[in-house]
Image 1: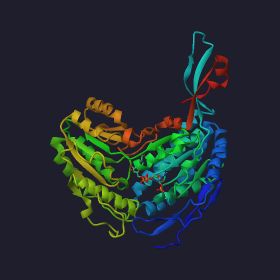
Image 2: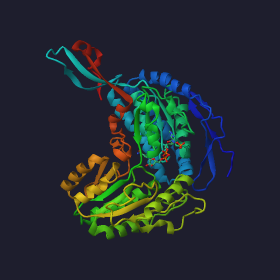
Image 3: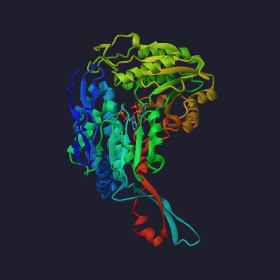
Image 4: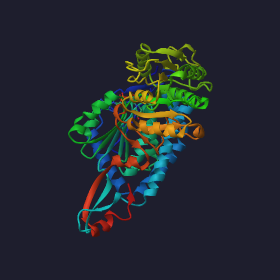
Length: 524
Ligand code: NAP
């Protein structure tokens, strides 16, 4: 291990500034080598937030939606041009195979591109209108028009370690399009990729000064900077989410907060489905979800529900596919699944696995297979593990514990009502997927699960080649879920812009409304 790795600078107040501390090291989770250090000690945070809020915010709000969309299109081009660097950083710092790197890096670039297109459609306007003007009395002269204007605050993002690229851009694209300046604090373990992407975009000189800042290292003091019109979007664990929610900025200053927390997502084979193709679709998707990014996706399938009669055949089909998953060094072309991002995460996965194993049976244990091209004493690799819980009612842990790794639990159900009740035991999830062949049944189940999920992904044989994947978050669809999932809402096309806008009802004469409030503006 070397101690001479570079200290990555922060970008605040329009300047690159190193922290004054020794820094926290970032490691290669396969080789154990130190890659870089991050540190935010000594930064003038009040000035950093003032600069973003006043200088960045003003410059962004002076542009129309279409002009800001054009900037996003340029950002996507810069990111695309530097993609090879991002892949190298991702392999080294996140331990991901190329396909998993693509989910994060290409997913982020694609999302920026989608918002560039959506924003172009909003046109050269400075605010959005919601609905039509409404009469407030008998006389039609006096009416109310709802408008949405960009917030005059800063958007602070506190992000999780598993998506250093996508996690930045899925939030930054709608924020910047809305006219809100962004300060991102990536999770320390994988901060390098976020920092490099911001560096490339800043160096390209696309965005106005103050529009995009990055602070790497401790989150200490960040929330204290937030003022009345700022917003904070957090992605991470429920424990940290609770700290954010109870901060005085939120409780006393009404800073708007969006929380994306953990989630025990489900896959459900529809009742009465003896159809082999439906089972096959479920098996493929479960295995993909368990192994992509070593299961470190907030949307990954953690619980699998099948009709009682199909428990054993589902178990053996999933196990057979998992058995062919090669785990090890992502630089080796034969490897399909790399590492979890750090020793701390490796330990957290082992701990969670033990908690689940105490109340389940092991149906497949990928940890008995050798790693490819990696030292098991050093590499943070976890084999895929399929568990089984034959009595899921009143189960003490399986509906509660999210193991953030390649682990899922198979469970049987008796009938549709039982299946829906078990899925809802997750207390609110980001996504559930449903597999089957009967359109009527699938529609009914999807609508039934909509009350407790931010997204319901339905896979039938007709869409087997067209569907986008249970765990893939598409910018056109909402991301976020109720209850345990944090209660947040992101993406969903232009719906994402609402978080970065203030809605106001303008009550005035039709002449005033017609003088620039209501007409010729884009609809929110
Ligand atoms: P975490 O420990 O809660 O950390 C998340 C972020 O919060 C990091 O940037 C962390 O910084 C920062 N942080 C830590 N303590 C803080 C504090 N007291 N005040 C303000 N910020 C603080 O979560 P994680 O372990 O990185 O992420 C894994 C979890 O995120 C999983 O449970 C997963 O389900 C969830 N997740 C959810 C989504 C979603 O969209 N719903 C997406 C991805 C992940 P440091 O890294 O410097 O500690």
